[in-house]
Image 1 (tube, rainbow, N blue to C red):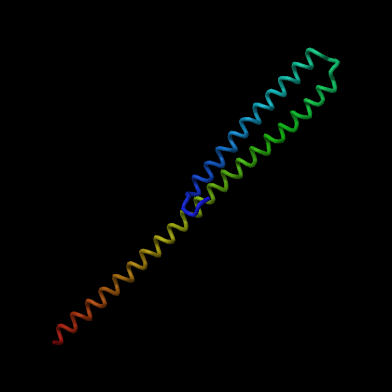
Image 2: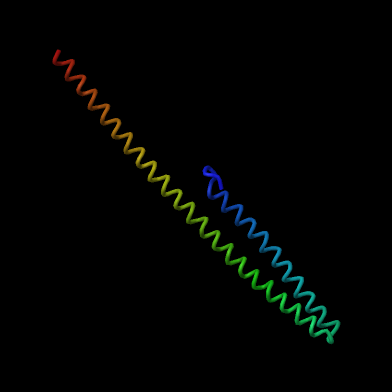
Amino acid sequence: MSKTEDPRAVYDRAIERHRAHYAKLRQVAATLVYLRTKLAAEHPERRREIAGIREEAERAKQAMIDAGRDLRTLERERLQAIAALSTVRAVMARDEIAELADARDEIDRIAGEIEVERALR
């Protein structure tokens, strides 16, 4: 991430990548369930192959659960980063306003001194 890149855009890209990954995992899991069901119906003697497919389906399921958890974590982090950035920007704006008020006070003070000097001449 470059220093000027918006955190929202960075998180949005990461979330989109995770969503695409999650969708692929769902497709793989659905395919494995289909194949397991098909093999069980067509070839009862292929128990070992079915067991292997079950194991793959379990791994795909766990990967999908992990990907969903990672996606939720990224979305939560995104919201926290945006909130933190908004807070920092608000504090900076408040500080800038305070600095402007100080500058105005200084200008008014100097203008007052000039008026006093002119009146004394």
